[in-house]
Image 1 (tube, protein in one colour):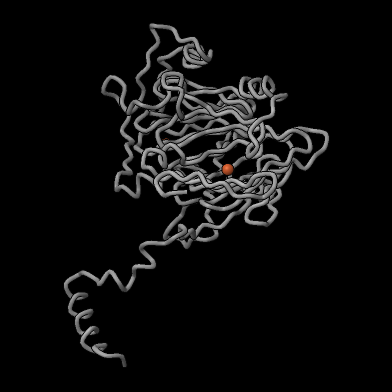
Image 2 (spheres, helix red, strand yellow):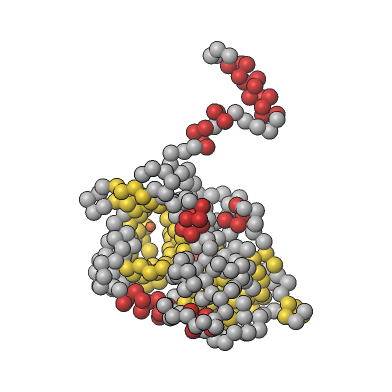
Length: 371
Ligand SMILES: [Fe+2]
Ligand SMILES: [Fe+2]
């Protein structure tokens, strides 16, 4: 026993009884040189889920499942943390023909990426009824009323991407279900906006009608709510002969026409084209990222390990994992959709990125910590 050890232990016991602790005993845990990342990279394969979705649809009635969704649970977590990454809550959600899921509202920001439907599935956001086709994105910014339904003959499957762990961290996750129109509860919103209202008003790049209604939900999110995949694919094709981004290929971000910035306060949305045979350089960053393969197939090398993906697969790249993307085909395009928490990180000053050059040198792009 070293000198004064028993006296120190007595102090520690006494301090513990006062609901405090000596900082010097846990300093290494509190001030890590590298973020302690519990999350593990993982691919959720659509072909594994497809038969389960087909089985569950008819036998899990709406009364049992306010949301009929399989949530992606990061293998680095136990059930006390039912999330996909540290800041993201992602799921395959599916809706049977004729189903209606009633209006609700919440502080978390949400989004849907449509994988499969016959074009008759919809989500209505603040009175704008958006029918979704494959690759379409609809956002439901924090504080917007929204309801979902499927008027088609086929099940509708989409990927939900929410920021729930962020409002939970702030003790600010709040939901409301009592939707009324003219004082009367109703199971769906009336379509108070005409078809494709937001796309027609905000979907023309540098042009915005002066009379457009720009406030939606808790504000500060994009007033455009719906992006058609055909438009996004055309935007990618328009720049496919440029060099592109060395780390992400030919990539476009969905932007708020009012600000030029991200379309939600906590989430950034991107679509990236990997041309036949394209292999990006490696980088790592504090942003957590979740990807969905929309076209083609390939693999992503994450911390030296190969994670293969094909259409409709979902995979995550947790904070500070080196990653590079590869289109596995020499003939056809691969397209990846992704959502990160970069807007939240930027607002909080938490952005950190390191890039490997083609020759393997590491370039550090810190935010507040000297690079
Ligand atoms: Fe919701
Ligand atoms: Fe990245």
